[in-house]
Length: 436
Image (cartoon, rainbow, N blue to C red; front, side):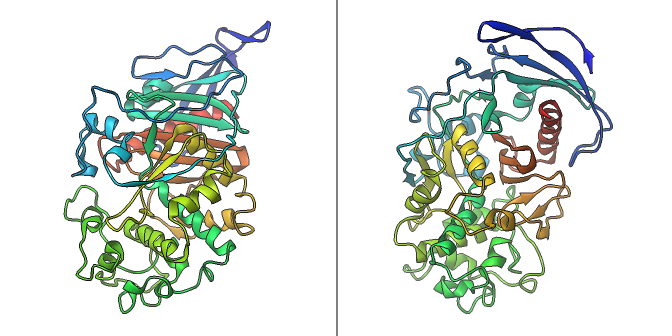
């Protein structure tokens, strides 16, 4: 370690000085680099950053709960049409105001809020990436991040906001919701509402009888290995992922998503091929709605929201029938994303079957992307972490052995861009080396 300078860090009435330069080397998933250098600056005061991003200004002992999301008077809400094609300006407004644009159900918080106290001094990361100097503010600007949260041992190491967002604002999850929905399947199995992972999906979703989903199990639905053909191209307006939510079934008694999925052909035997399908995550939501005596939002409130100690109500987007979308769009505050990550990493208490979190995050299928594998709607990385991941830069990344949770909420220009993932992996690599 090379001592490069010093900066005061107030701890009560005493001052400590830490300003270190650390050299990082090695291979990191998804990053083409042979050398990364990082410096960590330990601060107790708010770090000054460009206007794009700002730290939460609070004393080291405080971590106030967020208030409800409030639309700014001068903001024009984007139209629901072309949700996946909103402009950057529309994203920044729309992603934190989903409940004002789309039909949603409320996920009620409980009376107790889990505190995430500041970890003494907040860490700032400086590093070089592809020959350019980066820090947290540069990372946030490069990836259009509205919220960045780092939790270590249950304490807040770093909390930053951008794109006009504050701690009070919710932000939509996109496919991060998939990991939450799959967790509700575990809760429903524990409650005896679902027979088990190897039960046929047609036992629960009548619209799928006689379709390519005959013989497909709940386990195969969770791992997206049904063998049913699907197109998840976000850039193609005519792809399945862009049209299925607007499908109108001939039989008005049918769930529109289940009816659409029942039309799809089979391309492989069940359990033999992984293909990422948002529609199958929504089918999981339909399946849950058939076995629950309450809405998915109410079940999520009782099984996860209240136990994890959420600070604010969440909202969950619904389909045309009023059923929550199992594969998308739960809105919550940045801190509540972090609380979900901590709660899941701790095993989910008595809500889930024994060892559910380990089974759900086992590397069951090769995803053929950046060395990752897929579990029960979770992405498993070769560096020992797993993550709930959503398009446009949403992520809850969990390093169980390090007791580390990293959350990003973003508004990337494109739904699924390798360059943005590479920028994220570089920052996470530097951050982990700094913390560890």
